[in-house]
Image (cartoon, rainbow, N blue to C red; front, top):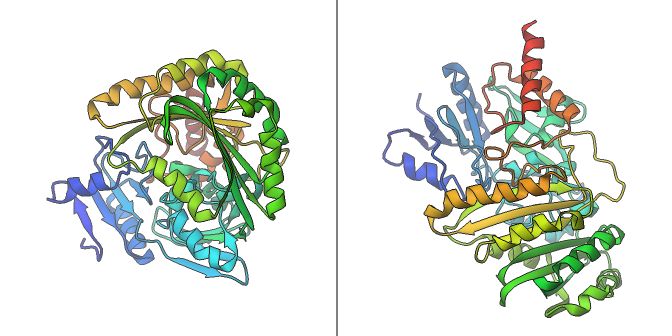
Length: 460
């Protein structure tokens, strides 16, 4: 079949370059789909899925390519690249937007800001919204506005047989439930996300502190005790790494960002943080830095957009105090690679707010992630061992992983509550009984048993 959009089959002259270009990570996994289709329209998606259905092909979907594991890239079958489905339609009166899955979070916020709105898109502005929203979406001001997927009010989805449906709380509600948290285990191609937008904060400001790691234990203990008292419009990060933003050597960098409704609220929140005794011991400070949302996005983008570097990542959620795993933290810190590699802590917690009824269902109070970033491909195997081993030791006190920086192939772990995973698999069997869409990269033994259980019930 001839497609009206760029198509690359294994063996074509441009196939390998196209395959590699699909992966943002400098490390390109040796997984080879039979055909890569770069769709331009929703109609192209329908045609591609129907073709795959007729040929019995499995399907992977790529939106922005920021999955560091390239979870969309699988052997055999079809890879549908929806990155060109990046249209943005804003309804200022309703405070809503309709976006394609290839839309970058930074581009969406660029369109929303003149209308006085924002969306809790990814901290890195070039992340495609497709994968970001499907896996949950921890972004700017998410502690106040909720995860990105909590602001998804509907999705347009092409099902495994090529049928296009509109799913929301009233229509195909089970599909809508699954689309908010299933991540790369989702069983359809989302062509549009219908989003609820939020008021653009009137005061955006941050303070930054750099500490000697000699103070790390005291710093972590202080943040353990204080972070649950911070207002929801304050985002707190601790990053440990070498040569951070002009600070030579190994340091602990605390970054506190506030996205508040008034200048006085922003300054008060930061002043309360500054007043903690540990902050008087900082080697360097940058206080009450007045920003806008674009600068916030650029700050993080500059940290991660480092040319052709390769990444290995893993993460865990923690509910108990981080001070309880200080020996394991120090073990990771001792093995950190050169800048910009880092160990990061995001102080999340919902302050008592329940997680809505959706597939995403696993969180903790603190999110810990280790990013190994290197330039020599020969270093891959070293970091592929070190990173999951270190996070795995932390995870013994953790509650599971987040489907954004997961490392399931090297360290299968829980990323969804058992009840929600069972529910998701039952919905999968309803819409994709022959598993045309690739599922999760790897599962724990317990979740594999759930897959078998659901299949057995269907067979019976």
